[in-house]
Image (tube, rainbow, N blue to C red):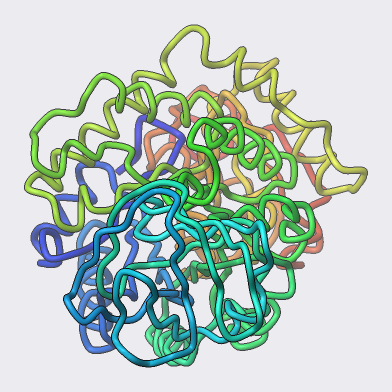
Amino acid sequence: MRRSRKVKILATIGPASSEQATLKKLFEAGADVFRINMSHADHELMRTLIGRIRAVEAEVGRPIGILADLQGPKLRVGRFANGKETLAVGQTFTLDDDTVAGDAARVHLPHPEILKSVEPGHRLLIDDGKLELKAVKCDGRSIECVVVAGTSISDRKGVSLPDTDLPVGALTEKDRADLDAALEAGVDWIALSFIQRPEDLVEARKIANGRALLLSKIEKPQAVTRLAEIMELTDALMVARGDLGVEMPPEAVPGIQKQITRAARKAGKPVVVATQMLESMISAPVPTRAEVSDVATAVFEGADAIMLSAESAAGAYPVEAVATMNRIAERVEKDPTYPAIINAQRSTPEPTGPDAISYAAREIAETLELSAIVTYTASGATGLRAARERPKVPIIALSPILETARRLSLAWGTHCVVTRDATDLDDMVDRACRIAVQEGFASAGGRIIITAGVPLGTSGATNMLRIADIGAEGAAGK
């Protein structure tokens, strides 16, 4: 089974989509990677979902990626004596370390790190920005604020701090337990929330120790500011537009989305565009025209993957949402303007042998109109380099390691096939030709280009290009 598009679709699993039969329908509709949100899944449920996904994988015969999304720190105000209070713009309102129930003048803030870090002039956004406060006086135990916008506050609402760099790591105790459980269960990707600085990745990478790849969710202004440094330490990025739109002006988010997407493409690391892509399909069988344009923009921009959240997790039409996203992506990639836009954003290759080989493979494949680029990849690095080039022709990534194929299911344009390592150069060429034919990318009489590392099986040593003619029986022609 092959997709008719190169951008990947990441679908979140939830109450509406957790049964194995539904998971199979989601895959058939277009889902390439499944996301498990650890904010809503305990370890037992996570293991059950992973088991069902792996059963679907075995049934369809295609590698499927699994991403576990860690919750991250949740910053919330305390409780109110009346559950809710009405405020007035311009009034004073205080957040402090007093555990007494709140009223219209103050409320407990059970986060000493916030009380010690906020400075006068900093903004505090409550309940996804519905209430905006501005700090005017801070003493380490309380923050006296003035109400700038909004008129109500209630129990346990979330707090966002767009101007404050908090001295807290990205992993909570819950996250560490979830991370250990997810790694033990064999997930392929770990998504990290609340990333502010590159140091926030260090602990997770040490714990993962190569058992899964790390995806950093860019959802805070501080992360945008230090994007280049974060890029060095992460394996992939997510444009978490919902949280970005709370902590930054909404009108700034589209430009930031483009900046992050292009930076990730330049670095050759997968980038996911997420949040509210087909939001109306939570309750409606068709999207709005604006949502269709939003998805299309991400595809035109060359994102590796586009993500569904509540649409597939809790919506009334999870399969229809995936199918709709699939149709939009297919249509965009067939648009006559698409190749020129993708080409205009292509970066020059890095001055390394493997990057030069990947660049040359794309140039040759497009010039000679070859059927496919076939890459042998053990670690996945060669497959990612091929995807970085965004070639017009299909990419077939061959790997002897199932985990590598699953991880590459997030990367643009890669059709992953698990196969044993070639024994010699002739076997390598024959195997590439046969698989290209079997998977529906080529036919007898066609030609493919092959990249690999010699000696065979050497990880990260891509140093060979070979154009192969496909013979009458699907193997390499003479």
